[in-house]
Length: 271
Image 1 (spheres, rainbow, N blue to C red):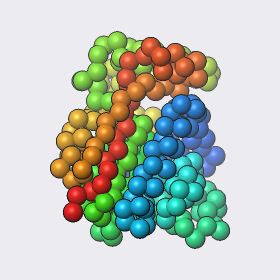
Image 2: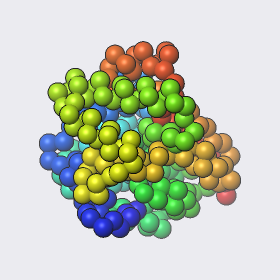
Image 3: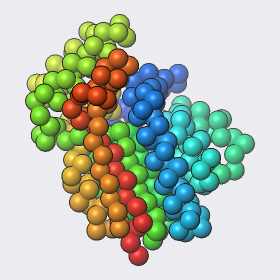
Image 4: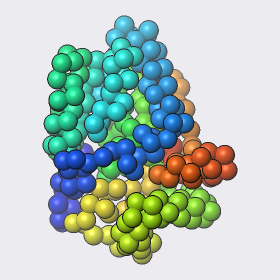
């Protein structure tokens, strides 16, 4: 679901940010770090198992699948999956990766229109996706309307809503990001990006600002999402946790760090 900006669309900016040769694992804590990755994988297997037991099948829409890191796990758990991607190079990687797997359908979706279709689903999976969508509440509301009774909604690895976070949480999060940038050899880019974010001035033509759209509107409101899901599902679980790109700081943050990120699992869609 794309918001029209005065410059490039969100879809165009996403394609710039995730062009040919893009490494999704490089800056993705849910792919890099064992503890977070295993939390995602176990959640996916539990979701598919529960929905299949209840509905006899599990038709999944995985929005923004990247290079299919977690699609394999959905298929292994028994789901039939449609994966969508705004980036044409990423969609091409997905088509090649799953070219011999009839249980996976790949849709190149440059303007986010697949979200707005009406075909029924048994589950929706959004992994590190909602913070890229300007109207994420509207998108989730529409997606929930497509989920069949007994189905599920799973979202993970989105930044907590900034106004609800403590000053300590924000400072540690930004500090960890800059240390990671230093290790990548591009501290100057990280400092420039952070300076724009702290001033509240964003460049609508710069994918560093607009592809990570949560910085424009202060994170993702996990409480609002939880409230949207509760009337539609019998069970809704919200989990807050620490997440950062740095291996060392992730290990420390698992023990001592404040929550920066969240996941939501909504089970058993009401009839």
